[in-house]
Length: 88
Image (tube, rainbow, N blue to C red):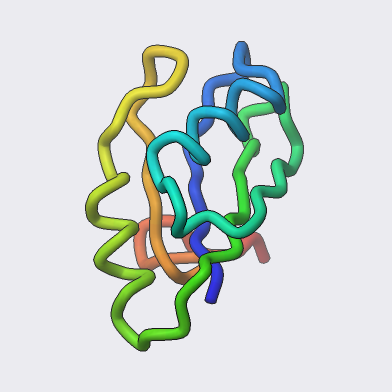
């Protein structure tokens, strides 16, 4: 199961994002991949150590709104949500 974290500050480095997410998610974070770092579209994909159907959403809610680089993060178990649809 994957967790998607968006709204990452352009000023954050890939290492900062990885360390923050591994610290916040603890043993639930199997791996963290950061995409488009340094751009307004930066996001991270976290592979979770769980396969429970709703666990990803519960973890996303716990991470939602935490600040990294002075900006509140958004998180979900889906790549795109209703507020952030895929580009056309």
